[in-house]
Image 1 (tube, rainbow, N blue to C red):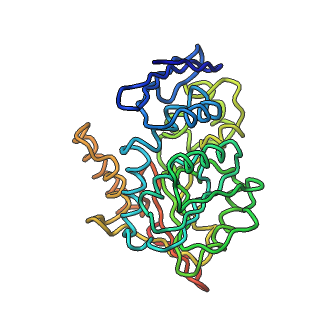
Image 2: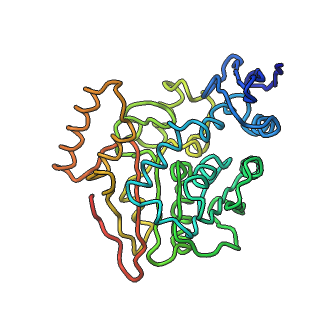
Image 3: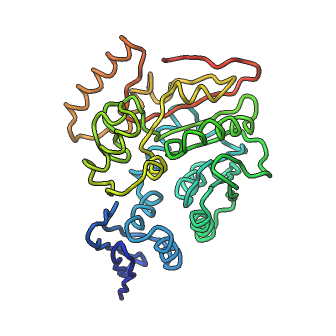
Length: 334
């Protein structure tokens, strides 16, 4: 049995499999970039249809893979979080996931920490519909969701939390939202609690790997970056605005920028699982036999750059901060 869903970006063929799963195949219309063209999923049909409505043909498989592919978001969350913390640290604790989107990472966190109470916060109402439907479909008892009234304001009825997590979120905030929302989140963190930010592109890295895949664009002014993105990136449409690119995440962050918004923060180094620094953590996430020699050589040079300059020049940031009341922020590892 098969059915096809139609969208301006393309069509999705859904084939029912004998084991109860469904195979999705996306055919793109001309001029549209598809993030993932096929996937086999255990998601129920009503959830797939809602995600198709919200994410379109281009983002459907990608959004499902974010939850179901163990080598995608789950791998990064587990490697990054457990580089700093242990599973026991989260037992009977409260977690705020800011920018939960459609709930893929929330679903993963709920599986990782079944004894924690998790609150997902999201600005976009359609994404929250998907997140809530996901939680309902998989009967997640330890998860709830709230909608932010604006990009620089938190919901009024938030409490205090032991952990606050921003997973692949910070880069999508506008500059004024970063300056405003991060201190608000910091206020919602209990003394001795932890803020965790991961999968945020490092804007010091020479190649912008998140939105455009272009070299040197991180180092040029906004107006020139927009021209370069429109002209040279296959992922960017010629008429896209700078505001649209900012929301897509074209401007990452630096450790210094994030710390500047967090008074009383102590930045931690990953020490679990034999790791010595964030360079080791990055290469843990890229661990495979593909291009092994090149990766080892790159790791050597990045370590050398850190010894000389103090800069951790990895493509993505994975950072943990402890809130210490009454203490000025540190500049550890700059």
